[in-house]
Length: 263
Image 1: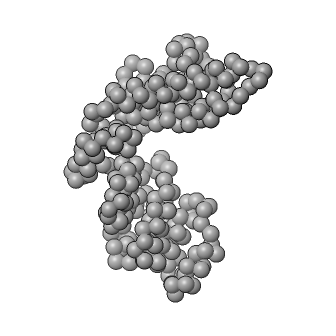
Image 2: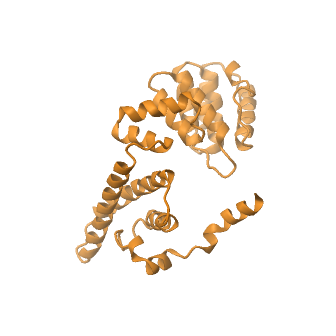
């Protein structure tokens, strides 16, 4: 197992550079903008195409959809910039935008009836297909949404009708992160909002304090005002927040063991 992990971790070290890939097979690159705009997004597309040139799973298609969506946003902005002197730059960027639109349409059509959970949610969230929503919720009932992003996706559906279920899904998401995954700090913002909506101000304080560890968006003065307004014991709640933060950082978050259902 260790050997497999080492090989996997070193895979990128033996890949050719983007320039080398394009020289070897221009088909990976020619339909994208040729100038320096959207360099990171363009590189992601080229590397994905190169890595999956011989076989492509349904999840690979989902990843490519996400990459093309990012590229479309970037190149769409770049395509609006007019060049009086270099009209070919505008043409190249428009080519990239048309490629993104075409590929998103193609991949969406190919995966319309996919059973892969990420693609099922994609078909619901982007196109509103009710059969996809039903299948995604069936996966949830069968406990088959076993990654943080899928639990976050589930929470985005539940938040419209059931805040407690939403909270449970976000707790589950926090429990599923591995060491190499970056935690989506929007989870904490949503938990703060839920606590405020449910008038559980002590938990709004706790999750705000946790959020302050993972992002810089939390204002200490506002937290102090929240504590004063609702007569909260800031010191004891800070201890709770520290315990939660340590559990999340250690990738052993368990809402039940932390007693969050009793707070």
